[in-house]
Figure 1 (cartoon, rainbow, N blue to C red):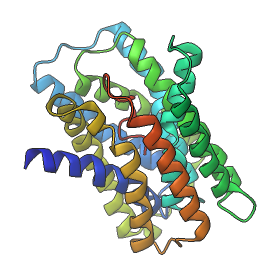
Figure 2 (cartoon, rainbow, N blue to C red):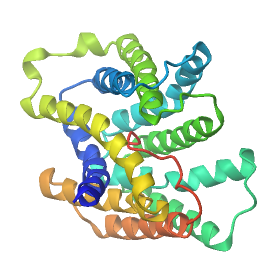
Figure 3 (cartoon, helix red, strand yellow):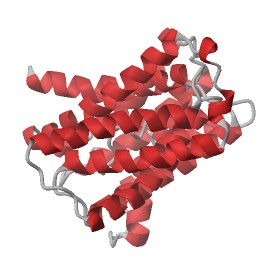
Length: 296
């Protein structure tokens, strides 16, 4: 039962964050909404690390956490949140699902990984082909698509930085410090963009507030579930979340946000998901790429 609940957490909760973000930004400004989300979630995870007796981060580790928070949370999650003002949640999830491709490309170029296998080249081609199908003329908002692609690349950069940087050994403490740092940057960006002045309190919907609360809870719950699964079952099986999440996001967007399931979306989904399967499933040695929840 514990395994079932943990997999449900990373399959359904992570996949549902795209719809929750889409509803939240209907009446809440994107960077202030996301910044406050990570401020609370980061504080909760940091407190959890203290309770578990994890050592306090050093000054160097706080600096590295701040550096990592820029590509991970400011550009990564912030970009996804901003783009979903114009891009449907299911389509956004499909674009972000190409993240393993960017991780591999960057690892080949800068991480010392050997050249690609044929199956990985095919997987990258299929995934990018799916994005091209989504954003072709008549498809989803091209500016939003570009921001989502940049956000995915930024998350890959941050993930690789996490792999090599001096950070707390506790994954919970690391996530807490990075969320706290990222939240400061995101709130500052939101204020600089004038989001506070544009907030109309009377126009904020109950649905947006409920979605924000849900997003905070997911940020706190999903990471511990993911880390526990890596120790309780095979990394290859855990890595399947990378191609289940976009399916969940597309279905939830269709069911609850009236997002159309067009032929274009179906072709794009098939290409992206098959590409991710080829990229993630064969990699059975070692843990899957560090593409944890707050990709969305």
